[in-house]
Amino acid sequence: MTRWFATGRMIAAGTLLPALLLFAGCGDMGDAPTGPGTNADDQNTLTWVDHIRPNIVQPNCSACHGGALARNGLDLGEFDEWIDAESSYGNPYVVPGEPDSSEIVWRLEGTGGLLQMPQGGELPPDQIDRVRAWIEQGAVKE
Ligand code: HEC
Image (cartoon, rainbow, N blue to C red; front, side, top):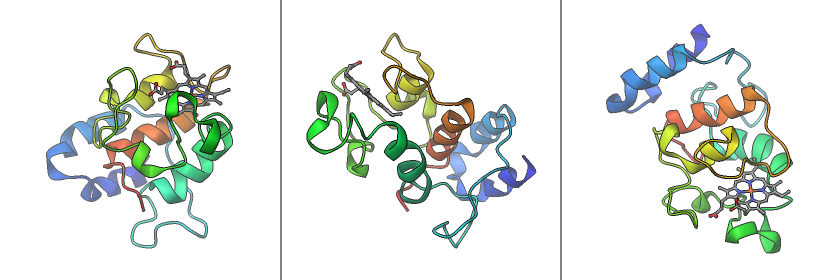
């Protein structure tokens, strides 16, 4: 947990306070990946390329949201589909710094009256927290 407070400097000044409050409410976040391919500048910074795509999207979403099989036209293997894009329900998928405004988070948590994703299942809470933390940190690509 303490290691995560060190990432505060990575967060845009305006979102620092809410971010810290949110982090304080999180579960155990101490298992951030530190192996090869981890961002060399700050190994606690979550990135889409190093953490979100390989660990969350590819194993859990790509079967239905990749390439020709993109459900509702959503190809989650493309970063641009996450940022500055609206779902067919009119919500932004990801609002950097604001996980609670991001439909991806509602989908993972089963809130907002929308079908929970991945369809037919549910991610473990630590993985959902990982997505939340990534968005909180600014939803950077790499
Ligand atoms: C078994 C197939 C399947 C898997 C796996 C799956 N989805 Fe979906 N997803 C769907 C279907 C079908 C829809 C359309 C139904 C709906 O809009 O609720 C959908 C819709 C969505 C939408 C709304 C797209 C839009 O613009 O309307 C989002 C966001 C989404 N999924 C996210 C995810 C995420 C994130 C994962 C992985 C954690 C995931 N899905 C895994 C089948 C799947």
